[in-house]
Length: 105
Image (tube, rainbow, N blue to C red; front, side, top):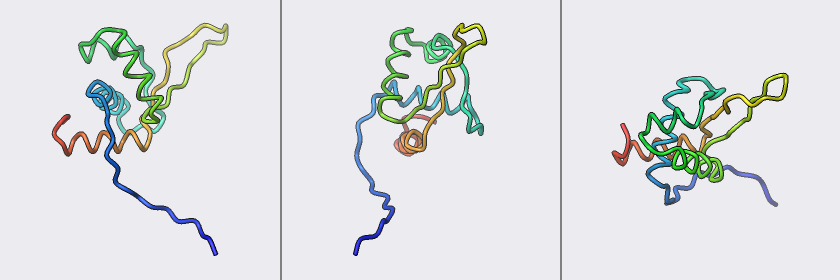
């Protein structure tokens, strides 16, 4: 007989420092909103004091790892607006682990 169970298993993962700081920034900016935050990559880069390319890589890495969702926003005429970024449940776990380790406040 098989049944479905939900297990929480602690697993060691490797996350880049820049990714942890990016996740923490997105979470801080979005506050309690579950809808995320609309922002430009440049604004993230400026606030973290990193290059535009570094911010872009951190966001892509977080999205690829499943820590962040990214939704493109468009105007009615097809023009591109700022993307919306939202930290996932896995991303929240990374942020909490980083706080416990003293990497972020």
